[in-house]
Length: 403
Image (cartoon, rainbow, N blue to C red; front, side, top):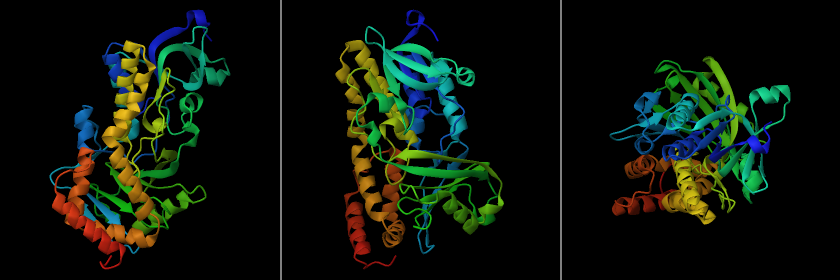
């Protein structure tokens, strides 16, 4: 362990090298800040891996990182009714998180960030009040050696839903709501086998597979993610995924790995400590309700955190840190609110799930859903279509329309 006299000092230490942390590190390094990107490495987050076209545009993601291009989604009701939702004139990209996240970290290093593998342990202070980050490298952990230290003028906590940075620095972070996501990565069958289509995402709204969320089959090129999520800690996700694989004929393909992790379902009310720490990504709770989509929102949150930190470094005014959350909610709060309402109502029983899938058959619903998803904002035009959707929703709720 270095003495504080010889401890390195950085403008910013970013804890966590996922999409949020790597994006923040890249932006700050490109702006000329000294940045340490601290990542634990060796762990792949369970994730469907979907990225919309806007993410690729906003964050300059090359198409070569895509392992699949999705051109439709299939919604499956409790009755096994299937509704296909084709994407008009476009596609949703799919990435493998191990390759994608490493590419983002490498880009941060190319921009000038210092990469280091280690596990964050503690945020302390030196005599001047400057943040001191304690972490252990894999070698230090193996040898049971003392932690290393670095100083940081600013800290970005992007270390996941169970963020240690958040718990130590930001009041209220311990009250994060989340679902547990579990998936199995399997070898992809040939197209047509087991009704599998490598250009289609299958989403199962069935209480037997998830009492409050959904289950999925997402193509990843040579592999497939088969998973489910729930807030109910006693629900058997492994059994649910096994049942889904049996029902779809995907129990016969090779299982490559199994992964589970908490996925936050609501942004925290506070992202900063009003001094020198701000959160981003899952640590801030920015995963979309209902869909569980997180990569775009994580990278957006990382960029906003970087902007807030840069402003704070320039001005010395810690109030700048609060702009990260404020700007995120201004841009995406309405979408998160609507998706939260949708999840709480439509996912609560198989009766409502049946009607939710039936609504997805409507062309207006499909068009507005994909336009909102692809562009990451609620569609503000097409008022006549929205009125039609409203009355169709009411008809579904009171049972006038057939599911």
